[in-house]
Image (cartoon, rainbow, N blue to C red; front, side, top):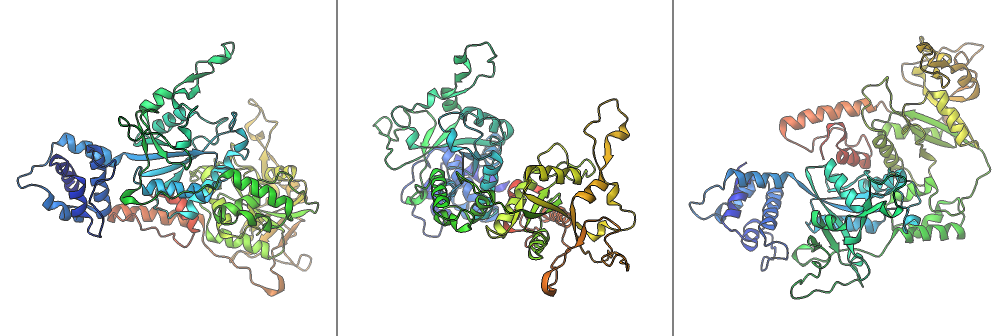
Length: 583
């Protein structure tokens, strides 16, 4: 509170840029002249607040004490509340695009916007489907472009670096017009002040932001087609800030009345300027170039080899490269492999996925009992009221874990067949659904020996009765399908400590009593199956404890799960503020 009062007092006393920086920054910062955009009252307020956040309240008070004239009084409570409001309201720059896929240049630009201090955070917003002239640029489904963005951000930046990904648009039937997007974000996040990133290539002859349109939600079938859209560009320019990146070859002409050259395009446009004479770092790499190279490489090389991605290695984050390979993206003529694959299904909530989960699926591959392992995050579970994490977050964490931990050609994937459904699938329904989608695969299901104990009988497992109708007896909503499941699919059983199975002379494995197609997961050549006792429940328990400790001692950095989940997953948990962990 005293530090915020000091900020108000400095404003009231007329403290300027050079004086403040000379007192606060003692590491050789050149304060000979104030850069553009640091002389107005609002700019100075942000400068003072940045100093407060960088130094902490105590050091800030010590180093600014001599800047106030003797007898200076604390400014009014009203002005102090204004400063507090600015301090609490984040400046968020919206970086929109298809991100199909996100590239290293996208990440560099997002980082440089943060470094410019023009925004407190940058949000990447993958677009929805495009039905305009840019439609060819967004062929990949929104869920995959969103996951690739999350992979890129959480494996490239530290968890504290303020770049995030928003899914507000990419799952809609079509892309949002810019004005509608900014309005939607402002409505959802009233604590944020949004600006939009554009390049100077958008400010050339023939383009006019005032002519940009939005969907006319009052339009009805039978109204003229010309009324489907309404011009909202002028309102957009009046209501929101636009941050402009200079693009080589796309200059904007200034004048005496308008030195920046931007007022002709709108009242709230400003150039992104780097502090202290540094240069804005960018590049000419585009998603289109990545797609082009991928298509060429797959035509020239063996398309089933990971070497086909060599021409884009180093241009996208490693996790994104792995994701592209696993999902066979950007191949115009995908090769159909004729041989059948043995696929082991590893289901679970993965709330969150842990290092033990990853070790387990890796060992299933190493056991040679399956050619591939698919992680299948479950859908909503009414029987598990504690499962509150949205499916999109659990799916993204699985994708981040798999693509950041394993090499691109290691045969582990994540399947979304269930997690975006209205409810979780029964095991038999899940396996049947997968078999229908992938008839070239032979599926097996992974269970532990703890599932084969007295009192549990897989033959009694049930499925949803899709023939049930309202008015039918409630006990007919499910039907027993366990016996069919055990007859139609293989089950791979992992031995769990303390959960033995009784063998007999007639059944040396001890598994036939539970089903005709069950087998132990055995490692080759006398190797030991590596596993651990870490569970998602333990992770959630530790984060809840960490939250209580953090609130008690005001330490935001104490989280007892570092090293128990992949770094990218931990970064995702922090950015999304899951499990009571704050960003």
